[in-house]
Length: 187
Image (tube, rainbow, N blue to C red; front, side):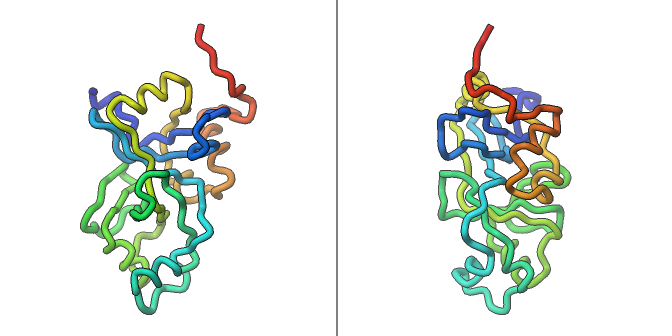
């Protein structure tokens, strides 16, 4: 696969009629995509959990009350016991991948420790689990019209209310996704 065909730093918008309930009406940020497959984080499925509960589980003492109120998202059906933090640029952490100049993904606990003490990145989104695709799987799903791909923006990832992200991501390229038929066709 050439670098130009990578879907990294793209938002995948589940098309109406998505057959997999794990992804119905979701927006997924593709963080890494290469010949081995792809990894993404669903950015619009808040769980009934907040960071305060996670800080307690990790035995973080004196956690920042503001950070403790932030919701945790279901990042995807794979590895729901694993935590992922999407964030704005900040001090580098132990295991960080740059998705773009303004969106980073950190997989190490040090970012959570920084957030708990009020020294974390300005903008964050914490998710449990991820969306994963094997080699060629995402490309096949794209050809089957399962996803609409749009360029990712920090505004949609961090600032748009969760319930508006599916529509807003599609509107970012002028599409009203509510008007799209769930029946795909090929000419």
